[in-house]
Image 1 (tube, rainbow over the protein chains, first blue to last red):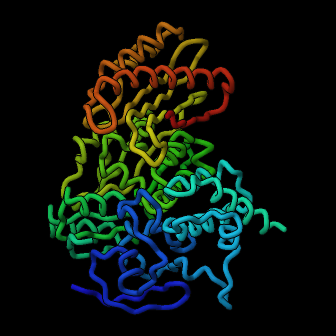
Image 2: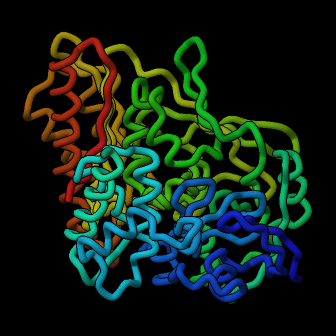
Image 3: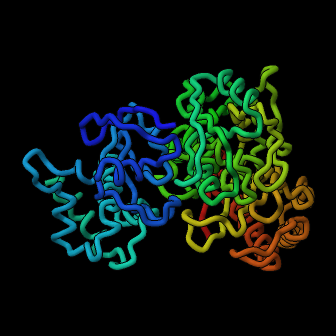
Length: 157
Length: 302
């Protein structure tokens, strides 16, 4: 039976009816049309569905929508600034040609955001370790790591 | 998620227990859900009810008492264990084993209780906790009981928990003085992958003599297991290379691995021998280097 719940997504309260077995990724994409969040493997292995819950990276495919009540959810749509400007990480990804097909990128960027929020000066090794749950089949990761390094360096200036 | 279930929520351990008592085997507890939802989706299990225990307060933290005994709430996330400065200082092997599971996004949600109750033979937190002689506190309708982790696992995916019981706490004794512990995980893709073999060794060196030797193995038997034969070869003996090799051989003989998609039984046996040897050497090397500081290490071998 569907339940009426409230989710706080990108700063906005959304009231909606959900089935108890719906994952957060399903609700974001298919109920709220927030299709920036991707679903790749639906098993917690690829990281394409990564969103931030209370600031921490979480696989939304393995997270029940019911569990997200009362929490602050951020998707890639919520990362842009007030006037629609890109986040420095997004700028860095463009600058460094870190995007090819793009499917993994929302997850990569949100994972990177959580990583930099926790540790603003990561080493390359720490960045690579932090990305171990985000699979990219196009770029070979080098430019993604470069982009994150550069965003971290920019933030220091 | 095509498979359907009803969602129930409990805000206290006793509420979860009474829901489990009412719904019996039709119900499953969910904490983080990173294992459970995968099992439901792949149709290995089909619970009619899932009982969310994630919001139960007071069972998600790490505390040390005056004797240095560590209590880990069952809902402590793997990430909490990974980054806890206290754990890194006093029981680092647990912290580093937790860091060997999945990705940060999995560890932010997955719990130590879930890792143990899921009862995968390859559970990365199990060998270290077995070697450190952990106990688990189990809550049920009649109150709490404590079980040695040695007696907790009953088979692949099975524990001694009755249908109306839940794991609430893991208790780990203080490391004996001058004792080190390491966990070595052999996996193709590091933390993101399941262990082919996991080996945890705890030991101290007292004037060249091996003491407090505990060895535990993962992914090479129906449950995580102690390698007691290997332990007894080392315990109380003067350390030398032949002794280490004998102990490692004993571990490879007493494990009971299967052949599966990750490795053959024979390969696993060989790797138990290799990793046990490395782990023992690593523990004693650390003993010699810093003899008055209890440290521990976990390494992924790939």
